[in-house]
Amino acid sequence: MQNTVIKLDPHAADRPPMLNIRAARPGDLQQILDMIALHAECHGDTANISAVNLDRDLFGASPWITALVAETGGRLIGYALLVPLYRALEGLRGMELHQIFVRDGHRGHGVGHHLVARAREHARIAGCGYLSVSAATGNFGAHRFYEQLNFRAGPVTGMRYVQALG
Image (tube, rainbow, N blue to C red; front, side):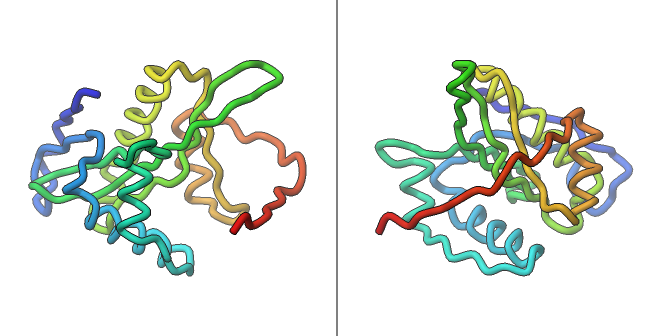
């Protein structure tokens, strides 16, 4: 996967003018963990993920997820986590944009838009026919964000059931 370098608005004095969207690397692990914790706080949750589990799932022998990161000035300011999906009735591969996060102070400047664009590109390269994302019913800011990016709201078709396996 190639890096995407985007020139940001030069009038934003509080941040460097270059943004790099790239695949995460092992050296990014702690910054990603920190942002996952911040993302959880934004939703009134607590992140319980460990560095060992995130490392396994991103960089292990059988990677389970993909992380794209937004970097500027040598610091990560955002991420998007992607998980493969499949529609068996159609034989169609997809990708779930499981989480997207941009640090305070960098929101509203297009970083999230660039992360989603790169997620689309990653999904297309992987042979996917669709990119999916969900947002809580009352998260109207997220709804507007995804609608601006041409996502269509789909009907909720039922309950999701979970069973612990451990």
